Image (cartoon, rainbow, N blue to C red; front, side, top):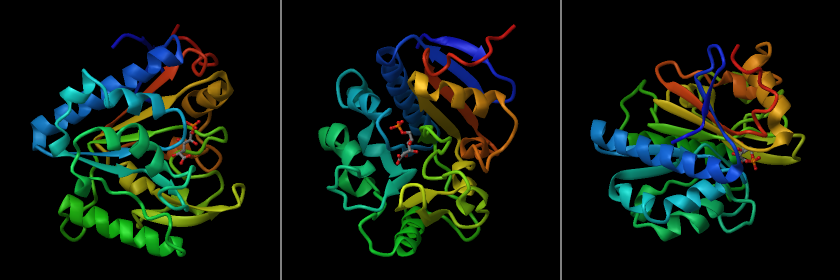
Length: 258
Ligand code: 6PG
């Protein structure tokens, strides 16, 4: 897969790729490899997609040979880590982005694509509905948590990840799996998986690109623990692994291993 491995104590594997053009195929390869690993281990693979712009080229690569042919789409279930509270055909919809560049171009059974219903007027209702979707899709018994094989996450310019925004109560949510909450800085509602579910994942993959994120990447990975200000720091899988795939620009403030 290439990339320079950078050791950042206690932060999982950090891989740095020279350019965004090298980062995208590396992420696509990791997604393909981790879904294959899940297929081998338990048949069905369940992944939660990130929204935003960074993952888009990686998703597009999954829709083309050779990766398209390497994934067992019939055994893949796709979910989202978060969603904007808009219609699924809205330009800001995370579902619409993934559907356009990937899901409409591959043979995944539609009933295995589980979008968050951002269009519902009541975000709390949408959050509750998605918890039911998770319960059913994962075939969970009482007290069990949904355990994703892979959760893809980005890093926002303010340190948010999924839709866990700085200063929001969702960062410290301990029981609900999904919350719908007002994000004051966006003047908008968002739906998001919460830390209990995100940290139940077998594997979390952060994908970050661009110099504008460099200082934030350094703070999250090398700075003091302050998850209320840097929600990405709350992501520490209890029995899983974390990987950061960065381009050189996003990694440019990290102290190189001595
Ligand atoms: C969203 C995403 C969000 C995203 C970051 C980074 O709904 O916006 O899920 O958490 O990953 O904001 O976004 P970019 O990749 O566009 O920088």
